[in-house]
Length: 114
Length: 113
Image 1 (cartoon, chains in turn yellow, red):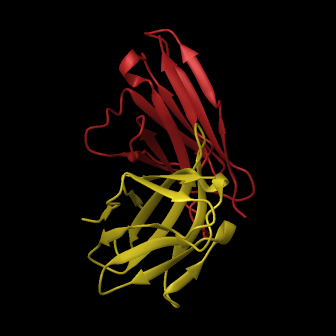
Image 2 (cartoon, chains in turn brown, blue; image 1 turned 90 degrees about the vertical axis):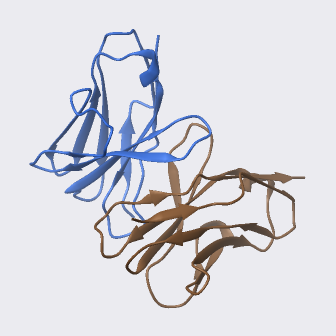
Image 3 (tube, chains in turn cyan, purple; image 1 turned 45 degrees about the horizontal axis):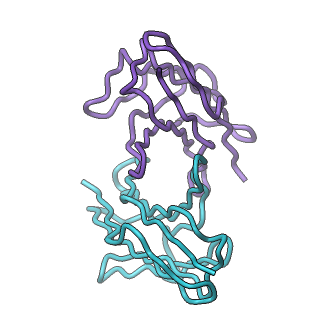
């Protein structure tokens, strides 16, 4: 079975400081990893994904994530956070050998203070 | 990119009535769509996988007779919450299988009073 863990319920960061949102995963096959952002009462917006290739993935709005196979992690990062980055962030995994189901982490609320 | 449109964005209904939520793929054909439910401050839970032209596959614990899914065309899947009760109040989100990061609809906030 595939699973995703986001160990932090909330991350607080000052505007302009680096932002990191942690994610670890577990799959039996090759992992397909995703990050989404959700604003209040809205659907999920795709940020980036890792399927194969370069371990550092660059996505939308200045976000990037680093795939680390040995640590089974896929942390989301942004060098300089904006107040508008305040939202709920979800990491998700799909087992490449197990169909199309996405399994989501519990979500991490990011609060960027001016 | 692949875009999914979901309607309505919010709905209030009386207990015992049924509510239909639509999920459309706007610029691509979606043979497979997914329906999720999200409780306040919680993650998304997959309810069912909707396959065009065949029966939906429901996750364990999801009542298929209560949450009716129809995927009659390559661009439309519908979720009908039948005989809704207050405990069905939630945020429902659809997604589609697509080549890019699976696109999601904007969600439907259902409130049953």
